[in-house]
Length: 117
Image (cartoon, rainbow, N blue to C red; front, side, top):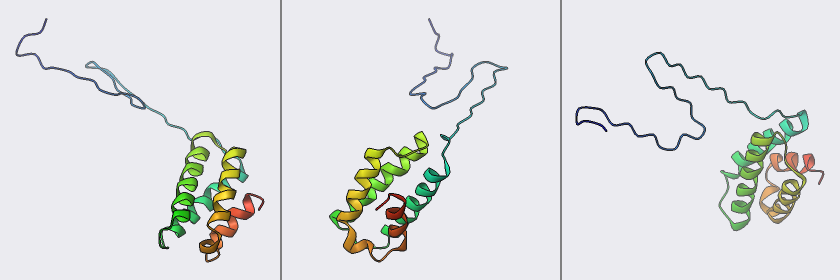
């Protein structure tokens, strides 16, 4: 039972958090990215470059879908260290759908080349 002069403590969502309690407590947190091979690293860099380039063109349904697919690919590579074959296939399809806009960007050719298109 608490009295009115005691402070209240509330701890909400602590996922991905580090905390320590007590007068001599010490908390330390280490976050590590998933290890990537050189091919995944190269694809990640190309995906990021194409995402930046897409911000320079007018939005269409195709470019929005491609931007979302690129973001998902970047997230997957960052979390797992690779982009799975289904993710790569989806990205190939999105690149094909947005081909008319993408011919403007060398970065689209880089991503396509890394996907084996």
